[in-house]
Image (cartoon, rainbow, N blue to C red; front, side, top):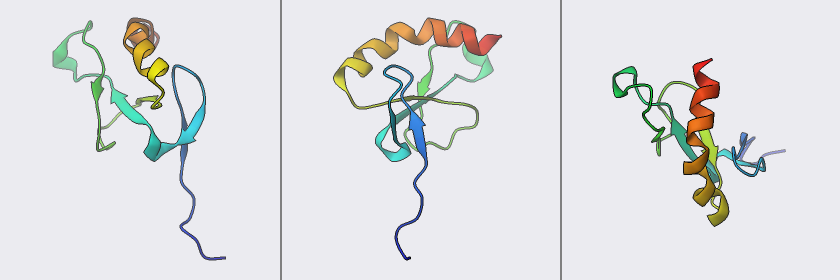
Length: 78
């Protein structure tokens, strides 16, 4: 049963759809020195430490994600 193996799936934080990890953009909380009000930063290499936020390629999700950031960051701060 050869093949390319298992590709992990992640969920878009906006539409809650599941997609292969490689099809999503990842954002991570900024480093501590950026302050509590700093927005998540892109992680194109998907290698930065910590839990990330994944966003799919749908235009609607990319448009809504910046508006969701404040709520997402508050949940992470708990």
